[in-house]
Each structure stands twice: as structure tokens, then as C-alpha cells.
Image (cartoon, rainbow, N blue to C red; front, side, top):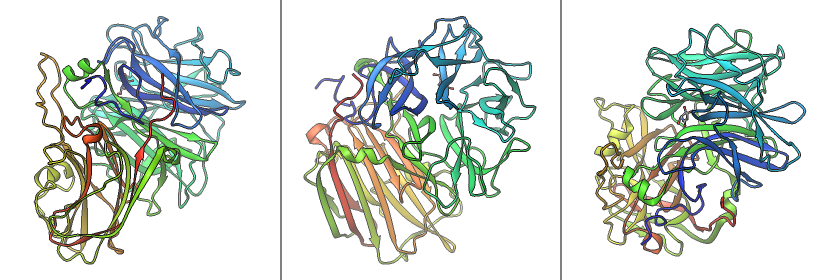
Amino acid sequence: VDVTKEHRTGYHFQPLKHWINDPNGPMYFNGYYHLFYQYNPKGAVWGNIVWAHSVSKDLINWKKVEHAIYPSKPFDEYGCWSGSATVLPGNKPVILYTGIVDDKQTQVQNYAVPADVSDPYLRVWIKPDNNPLIVADNEVNKTAFRDPTTAWLGKDGEWRITIGGRRFDTGMSFLYKSKDFMRWTKVQHPLHSTDGTGNWECPDFFPVQVNGKMGLDTSATGPDVKYVFKVSLDVTRYEYYTIGTYNSEEDKYIPDKDMVDGWNGLRLDYGNFYASKSFFDPSKNRRILWGWANESDTTDNDVEKGWAGIQLIPRTMVLDPNGKQLLQWPIEELETLRKNKVELSNQELNKGAKVEIKGITAAQADVDVTFSFDNLDKAEPFDPSWDRYNAQKLCSQKGSTVEGGLGPFGLLTLASENLEEYTPVFFRVFKDQEKHLVLLCSDASRSTLKDGKSSMKDGKDAYRPSFAGFVDVELKDKKLSLRSLIDNSVVETFGAGGKTCITSRVYPTLAIYDKAHLYAFNNGTETVRIEKLNAWSMSKPVQMNH
Ligand code: DQQ
């Protein structure tokens, strides 16, 4: 087996070799999607960061072009870190990014513009001499001052951006204003801040339609518009978001009252997902989210295979009609890679059932299933002493093999024939006083037989958590749906139409290529039914980045 290949993904975005992290400056411009990303041209660990650049007509097939932004000037000599693109009136794209100016990681904000806007790929980017545009003032910690957002235009005709950082332990997103995009002044107060959350990276701030399915331009306003504010938490390496209102007079974001604003907030993804960034796609009127998934194997393994990091499948995002959360769904273009459809319907799963989904390449597949059940009476009581914000702990105790009432039921992905290895994604329903609590798990703890210890002194060990999140869903129709994108070393799951999403990275040794299997299972005493299951093998895109 070729270690450089066996865990490579088939249809996820991934360069041929070396390290990648955050998606940067995604945009749609003159018929092409652009994706820039943090990249180390010299190895499979973080360092030497440049903006690598790929272009696509469909978000599936990608062509790699030359690096767009790389250290070359005093204002970015030590690194070109994350940032965003804004298409200015007159169809003029501009990138804002964080430059590292010294070996102490001092951060400034710079801009870059295309050398030739008539080049469809926008291959060459210029960093004009009036950079940096923004340097930290005395009130700002200059080593925690990064990742400028896409700009939005206020009613007063001035541009705004927000930049991640902190003041002591308070996570903070600074607000800057400009009339001409060149001279920026700091607004006295931040756009938003939250005590006790530590440093904020990669903030994202965007409007969403109330009761609508269309995405909105970042500058859109109106009566049926709410706002989403997302940050990446440097300390714990996960992201959370709130939904709220934007008071444009006072220039402040205010999360809705019932939103949890902090560690226990809603997450875009409860698994391996970080530094995400969204953009508005005017060609299809949608808002698209890109997220990065790091490897979760040992550093030795990353170095041995010569690559690390993937970008997840882009997702559309809309506000749930209940207004309480976002709904995410893989972009429709992904469906062009589907082939060999297999279907199941009305199949009962009694306690202990395990049904194989045959006829697809289970290591590289898309599966969409709706389970139904006749009643909720057998749901296990939710012990009030359990921490309802720690779904992951609950999932690690109540795994897929621990018998329950209603659930666990779901899929066993990337499974070896005799289940020495498998990554289960499954539901378990609890009863909590009058309400039901639905837990969704994606459990990597039995995903591989490999030993997870790094042999390198400063290397990281393998990370195989029982990722989980609760699903805020009405169970009136007694149905729960699950879609999983399985791709060799990644499983991306969308629960209940995208209310709760979980990504796991896993490295099976037996369940690889045509030795991987996919099963549906039930280990609860209540019988559940596969009402409908569609599964497809997934092809490789014709062109992927080389
Ligand atoms: N990655 C970039 C930073 C950002 C972090 C550096 C988040 O700009 O804060 O590679 O993963």
C-alpha cells in the first residue's frame, strides 16, 4: 500500500502535496470561482505560509494557478495569513489579508489587487506600496490582530470590516471604517466581543434572509434580514456562531436573547472543522461556506504521506425557518459526481440489525437516508446530571454498540468486513421532561487499528474523538434524516437536513478502497425503518488541482 495515497480523498479539494489550512478570500468573479488557501510550499507541517490559488467554473473541478500572495515586502515578509475578498462597485476585486512583519508575529492588514482584471484566472496579484493599510493602535494587541472579513457598505456610504483579536481573555472583533477602502479608522467599540472566550480568529459576519432560501450579498439590509456572527476559537480550535441583529446606527451586532454566546454556542460543525469562511455567489444567489479540516492522525503520519489538510465540500447556508439556527447543505454541483445509484425503502431494522448497502464504492460515496419509527415511548430518560452542552462526552459514553431505546441507529461508514474498524454516524433519542433531545454522533474511536502515538518529540498524537452535537428538531413526524459524504479519510455528516453537521477525519487500515463497507444499523429496542435510502458511488472530478 502506498502511504502517500491510501488516505487521499477522491472528491474533496486537496493539493498534490504539502500542508494546507484556512480557506481564504473565496469569491465568484466573471464566471469563475476563486479559492485561495493557506499553504506551505515546503512541507506537510504548518509554516512558510503563502496564499495558494485555484479557480473553478463549478466548485468541483479545480485548476491550480500560481500563488497569489507570498512574502515579498516588509509588510508581509514573515507570512501572508488569512483574509477575505470584496468585489467593489465597478466589478473590482480586492483582497484584504494579514501580513506578518517580524519574527515576533506582529500583524498588520494589507491589500492586494489583480494585475489584470481581464485575465479570467486573475493569476497575478499586486501589493501596492501604500501597504500596510491598517496597523494596530495602542489599544490593540498586535500579535492577536488578524483575519479581516469581506467588507460591507453602511447606509452612510462607508465601508466596514471586522478583524479578529482579543483584549486579555475577552474575544473581540474590531471594527474599522473607510470611505475609500484605503484610509481606515478604528471605531471606538468592537463589532462584538465576548468575555472569557480568548483570542478570536477568522470572524465571519453576514446577513441571512428570514423565511427565505436565497443568500444575500454581504452589504444587503432590509426588514427581513438577520445577521450571523461566527468566530474561530483559538484556544479550543472550534467555531461557534450566533444569530442576531445588526444595529447599523450604532454599528453593533447584538445576538438574539436566546442565543448562547460563548463556548457552548451553536457550532457550524461539531467535528474537525475550522477557520471557515463564507461568500455570496451572485451567479446562483446563494451563500456558500468553505471550511478546513486538518488531519487528525499523528505528525509522523502527515510527514510520511507528504500532505496534510483538506477543504471540505462547500455548503450552502440558509436560516432555518424556525430562526434558531442555520441549515447547511452540500452544494448541488456535488451531485454531478454521483453514479451507480442504489436504493432501499421500507426496510425494518430490529434491535441488533445490520444491513449492508451494496453496489457502491463504500470508501467514496454519498448516502442520504431517512429513518422513521412508530413511537417515542422507548426514548431513554435524559439524566439531569448530564451536561447538555457536552454532547461529545455523552457520545463517548453511549457509543453505537451501547443498547438504547430509540437508537442508537444510523450508518456504519468506512467499515471493515468484520467490523474491526468502522466510523458510526448515528442518532440516539432521549426524553427530557416534556421534550425530546436528539443526539447525533460521529465516532472515530474505532475507526482504525493503528496505534495513535506520535514518535516525534513535539509531534501530535492521533485524535479520535466521539464528536457529537444535539439536533434541534421537531419529532412530530417521527422521522430523522442523515446524509453522509464519505471520502476515504473523511466523513461529513448532515443531520436533519443540515441542522447539525459533524466532520470526522479517520485513517482505516483495513477498510480502504474496495475493502470498505457501508451498513445501516440499529442497536435500540425500538424498531426503526429505513423509509428511504439513496446511495451513490462518487467519481473523482475530472480536474483536481494539478
Ligand atoms: N490561520 C492563519 C491565521 C488564522 C489561523 C495562519 C486560523 O491568519 O488566524 O495560517 O487557522
